Length: 80
Image (cartoon, rainbow, N blue to C red):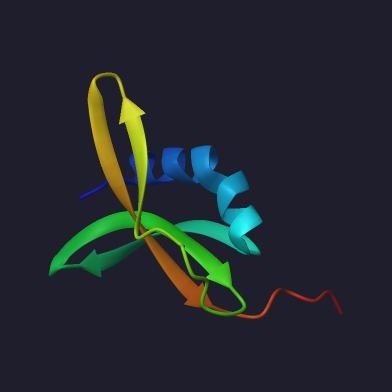
């Protein structure tokens, strides 16, 4: 399971790649995965994207962590 700090690091490191894959907004949130609470990256997309990973890898010192990635279908924000 990932901490909020690890999830923010994963978002920072992988934001460009996620945007290239079609994410129009990228955030960090706490959610439940496999019955346990964890922090993860949330990629907001307009439609399902093939090839979107389920986890983002980060390295902190010698420790490698797999941060969960959750895709949510949502329309991009349109200013009024």
